[in-house]
Each structure stands twice: as structure tokens, then as C-alpha cells.
Length: 279
Image (cartoon, rainbow, N blue to C red; front, side, top):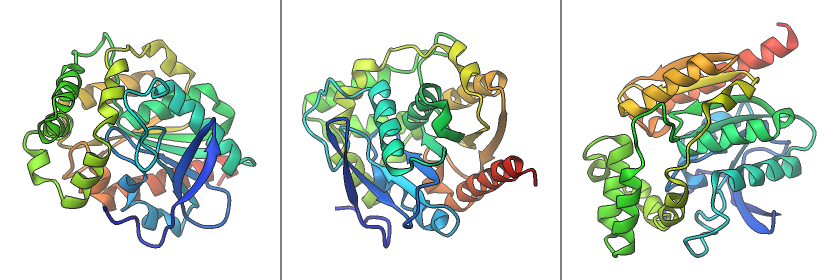
């Protein structure tokens, strides 16, 4: 089993008829919610939780259907919309007093956008790290997901995972990946079978202007071009936006260059706090 983030014990709560597993730093209400992307879970943020802990109480859940509450796949309740509903319920339960900063990566960034539209009063700011979604304004990108799911169904787990990870992070990424990350991804492999049920669902870009909160767009300097195209579009459409690039990093930028990633996030949250206080 992959090592959990140091010094943070797993906790659980019941949300929307499901058991949610999460890590939380500190005893206060969470100020930050971290939303992982495909094939990951709360362990994905192992280099963020310790770094953020001294500044902000941070909440890192595993989304519905992901380890350790996997369940069977395909799961009819596995969708971006359901994950956003669950995240709203989670922050209403664990952070009922104040709005919260949301940081989402890849598919998790789309969940964050959905959440910010669903419950704008609960969202203080957004950080969207290499958001992933399908749009007619972008080249088709869901074919690799379908092929990866087919390989998994045929029992070729390593082949399916290698195809998926290399498609989102660059050629031969899976072969170079560390052991703990591979273990986490293998434990979440079946989620792809549910995820492809919405792989070709288009995100309506007209919705972006509804996201009024301060937003930071983060991209990996070496991420595949599709993510840069998405960031370019969002930068034009978001009402209150700034953008930064994480050097020496591809799609998994928070793991490849955590120092730079964490610095950008903490500086952004400080900027938002200063603006709110008039400092």
C-alpha cells in the first residue's frame, strides 16, 4: 500500500448515502479543499498537505468510487456532477461557517468548476491545474480513454494504465513513474470503466463566465498541448483570472515540482485574503 501523507490520519463521514474518506490538517474548519483527478485519490496530495498545513487547514478527500471506497464499476453514480454535489455536501458538513478555497487537478479541476457554479457562495477561490474536459472548440481527446477502458476490460491492466498515463503526461511517463504512484493508480484502475461513460460529454464554455470568484490557472511547462489550449480558452473567458506555469513539470505538476506548485498556491490564497481585507 502506498504511504499516506505523513502525520495525517484518514477520517470518514457519511455524505449523500456514501462513505467519504479524507485527510485533514489541523482541528479548525478547512480553508482549502483539494480535488484529485483521474486514477488518483486523497494520497495524490502527499507533497501538498505537509506544505499547506502550517498556513491553512486543508481537506483532501477521495471522490466517490475511488480508493479506499472503490465499490463496483461501472458505477451509475460516478460523474462530474455527482462528485460536485458530494463536494458541496462535504464542505457544508466540515466547513459550514466560511467559504473555502478549491484546488482541482485535471478531471478534478472540472469537478471544481462544477462545484463553483453549483454553490458559488461556498467557494472563495479556484485553482485549476491543467483542467481536463471535452469541448467542440478543442481537438478530440477522449479516444485514449475508451481504448484504455477496453484494455482494462480485457485484463490488460498495465497496458491500459500505461496508455492513459502516457496520454495525459507524455510518452513513457508510466515507465518512469515511482512505485507509490503506480500502486495508487493500479488501485483506482477500474474507475476508468466508469469515467468513459462521460468521456465524450461536452462542457459548454458559455458556463465559464458564471465563475465569478478569483481563479488561478496552473499549467505544467511540459504538459501535452491540449491542456495549454484549455488554459488559453479559460484565461479569455474567466472574469477574474491570473495564470502561472510550473517549470520542469508535465501534467502531474504538483508531484514533479511541488516546491513551485505549493508556492504558487500559497501566494494566490494570500493574495485573495489580502484583497478581501483591503490590505
